Length: 414
Image (cartoon, rainbow, N blue to C red; front, side, top):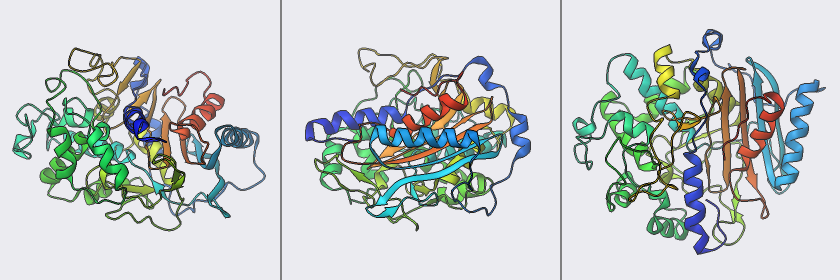
């Protein structure tokens, strides 16, 4: 969310929320399973997250030059980047400053927002492949008080097809968030906003992005597994992938070292590093990471390393294609059309075969993206100056890098 006046608060937050939902392009060949990627497997071990050793080879120099130019063009305060190709490091680097006079470093931690949804989606699919649940189980068994619980399924929560409104675009919520950025939110408080509205559509009949879906999915998974969501995801995803610096935070604190964030969304350029992120999703799924873990996350999730071939196909195309589109009740800006070219997966976004997530809030912006056909992983984090354009500028940096390394498969998110 980026705004300079109260009027632009709603408009920009809407754009941010929809961007987080941005759909994707999956060709029919994008579901071909990258078995070789799964065979490579494993985490990135105990290797430190540091700049690539100099001198750089030609490919690394080109990526660094692209990143430097993007930082200047977009007037960014910092850019952190990690690129791997076929499991081999191409470049790890950090440009700019965390704070005035404090250089950005690759191992600095930042908020990763919706990256947690990719992890949760993969963990859910593991339960499905173990026959512990079905994606088409309705949630009244675990969440009997949810409106239409007898119609809403786990699949609908994970794919944003319930019809629930998104509290992040609710003007009343936005007003409260802007006035009190340090407020600690509970799931009940967050869900009170979508519950004030009628459903956009009957569950399962269309598509619209709503943070409420993942607040509810976390609650359901905790009931199903009998485990706190942070333990479940660590056991199933972040642990097996070796994401040792990716963790939940129950408070606004961020593990050292910290990449600081700044934003102009409340009318003046101010530090937003420790604004309370509890509103972004359910407790236990509010994560921080660094750019090396983010690249490994991109590879592990995007390759389906932790999933069976069947579950991986569901990850990238869980039945959303054909849903969405404006109606009398739901505008086309909310019920975005899901097509074979552009659609939301199960906790991930798929763009031209790229499998990604793209968090952006409170001055932080990032993207993890993986192209299975090339075994190419990109991770970018970016922070802003007072003149940085609106939008997720980490996406723009990643798009430019992708154009160099995979010119035939554009990472065209917008």
